[in-house]
Amino acid sequence: MDNYIQTPQQVSEQPTSDERLLAMFSHFSIFIGGIILPIILYFVQKGKSKFVMFHALQSIFFHLLYLVFIFVLVVFLVVVLLATGAFTLANSRSMGPETGMGFIVGIIIFYGGLIISVLSVIAYGIFMGIKAYGGENKKYFLVGNWAWKKVYGN
Image (tube, rainbow, N blue to C red):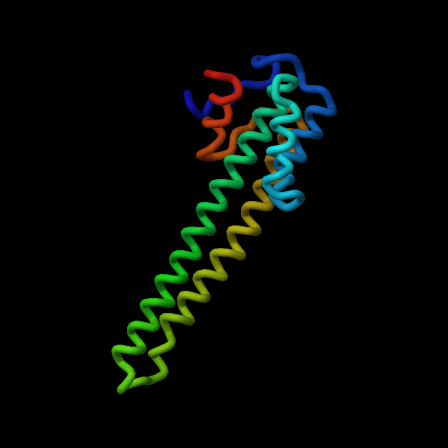
């Protein structure tokens, strides 16, 4: 039952409006404050509010997951650029219009992936922030269970 989401009533008391607001800000940190904001919220609320701790921690994990995705995207771009350069050097005698196509395709995939991922992550952060402000313990995909186990221990 890894995807089962307990309601706040099953975990503890209903979160206060301040707790819900802090939890929402931890999710909105994807575009306001970066990873620093949920780190600060996590340590300030440690021992005070498991609700805020959970949302801040999963936001931290989500920031890190997104950082890994961006790193993979950059590695992809570098590999494409290196492969295009090697291909160009190997075929320097017969340079035609197709020589730079790998570079162009790599750039299109890189920037397309970057734009789509940024917009998706911002939309997902807003969605999760709204859910947190509603008092829900909604989990992020991939990282929500890690945060849940770290904060609630089950």
